[in-house]
Structure formats: C-alpha cells, structure tokens
Amino acid sequence: MWAEYLEPEFKQFAPSPEMKIQGEDIVKKVSRQVRAVGNKQMMQAHPNAYFQSYNVDSHVQEMVQMGIDLAFLYPTYGLWLWAIDTMQPEVAGAFTSAYNNWLKDFCSYDPDKLKGVGAINLHAPESMVHELHRVVDFGWKAVFLRPNPVKGRLLSDSAYEPFWTECERLGIAVGIHEGTHSCLPTTGTERFNTRFATHACSHPMEQMMALLALIEGGVLERHPKLKVAFLESGCGWLPYWLWRLDEEYENLAWEDTIHDNVKIKPSDYFRRQCFIAIEPSEPLLVQVIEYIGTDNFIFGSDYPHMDHKPNIVADMVKLEEKFSKETVQKILWDNPRRFYGLDKMEKVNLIAKEKLS
Image 1: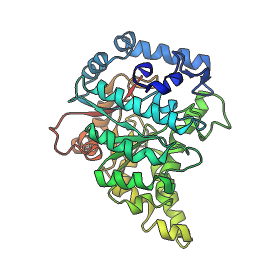
Image 2 (image 1 turned 60 degrees about the horizontal axis):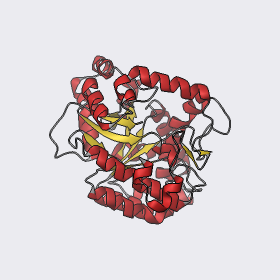
Image 3 (image 1 turned 45 degrees about the horizontal axis):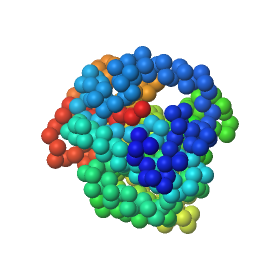
C-alpha cells in the first residue's frame, strides 16, 4: 500500500512489514504477547478476512455477514503511523495524502456501502484546510483526528482555527479517535507498561481531555454548527465529566479565558453539537442515555479488532431489550445519519464505524 501510494520522494519512509519506519518502531509498549494474542483473536473471529489480508472484497463480505449495510471506515495502523510526535510535518503529510488516496480507491469497490473518513495532518496546521478540501472533493462527509497533543498543540490551538471554521462551513463531521501505544503524549503511558493499563486509560481519558479542550478553548462556542463525535471510548464517563465541568464552570465562569470562550454550560455544548459511541454491554447505558437524552448516541462495530464483538446481532438484541424501538432507531440510524450528514440518503438498517486492519 505505502510503496504504491507514497510520493516518490517519501518512499524511503514506507513502513516495513513489521511496521517500522527506517528501523524504528511506530508504536511503543506493545509486548510480543499482545501482538501474538491479538493476531490470533482476529484470525479466529474473522478467518475469511484474515486470510484475504483484509482486502476490500472480504470487508464487504464481513459486512453482509454482520448485517451492516453502511460503514464509515477509520484506520488502525494509520492511528499510529503519523501519530509520532517527532515526525517531520512533510512526512506526516505524505502519509496522510497516501492514505486518503488509497482509501478513495478502496471505497470505490462499493461506494454505496463503503464511506471514507479522511485523515488530516495535525503536524502541519497550514496544510489541514487543503487536505480537507481534497477529501471533500472525494465526496466524503467526515474526517478524523487524534485527541492527543501534537507537537504541544491541543485541539483548541489557534493554529487549527481555519480548519474548524472550514469544517463548520462545509458541514464536515469530525470523529475524535484515540489509539493506544502511539508515540504521542497519552494518558497512562508514562505510568504503566501493560496493555491492560494503558488501553484502560488512553481511550476514555484522552477523549475526556479532548472534549475539555474543545469547550475550554472556545472551539464549540465559536463554531456552534460544528459536529464532533467521541469514538470507541464507551459513554459511561460522560455524565460524570459533564457534571464535573458544569460544576467548575459555575464556580469559575469569571476566569478571564473561560469568560471569553465558554458562554453556556459545558453540558449544553455537548447536547447541542456532540455525539458519542456506545458499547451495548455498558452497565449504566440506560441511565446515561436518560441523563443525556437520546439524540447524541451512535454505534460502532470496531471490526476487526481483538476487542471487537463479532456477534453484532447479539449486541442489537441487548439494545432492543433495554430501549424502545424509537431509541434503538436513533442510535443505529437517525443519529449517525445526522452526524455524517446523510439526510438525503436512502434509509438503511445500520451504520457502523469499522476499522481497516
């Protein structure tokens, strides 16, 4: 893939089959045991796709088997590949462009089922709008970002303001997606070494701070029509975090920066323009949705990861046992349709966020 799609002057940076760049690993703190067990679990869960190297034909076959009609595709290794804090911006940009070009060709296999989510190069703020326009020209409706600081910049950094402005103007949804083991500042990584600990910390805690950055930095205030989703971290953390932020806002709204950037309660920003992906097995899902309301929740399959649950139908049964048909309809179709800007598309049964291995 990289040898084919990278521009000639950047082919020297093409990752090896072991996913190393010029001999350096693109991830950290991934044990051999985690790699071996994860590989085995993915092979056992999806042997057809595994032995076809997760090509596009097998991807569509797996969607049919799982009962998924429409999938928005996020990367796996791409979450790590240009998430190396020391990477030169132009190299990260080359990976970003190559990935988007490859994904465009991948989705062309069945454009009614496969929808691309564009990569954006946070290492080079001056290029973000250009790449955004490129993926919009592909017909795509969404892009993804990592929640972590990149080269010391939070998502609210002023360097990103033209990007947020253009996403709002064009109606482009932004999915925030974490990836454990990356070479970016990540909650838990400096304290723990096991995947058990680092994976437990990274996804929800980085999402909590990303939401805080977008609120505290005034991004959601300045861009009230911007749509942002927090993905693959569960939703159980959300009520506590919104309560906590509302309490802090009530006590500290007089602080100069907060007074300028935050005009309403943090929970109101979330309800107005944010979405979050659920896990059907979450123990307090009913209470969370009762607290937040039914308009902000979506679903992702996480196919084909080691912690992906292959039996999507069983997950849907769990939802139907807990919620009314109307609420399930919102989670599986109405809300993702609004987030991804699909109002003009024919109704289908299920949208799922999936991964490319």
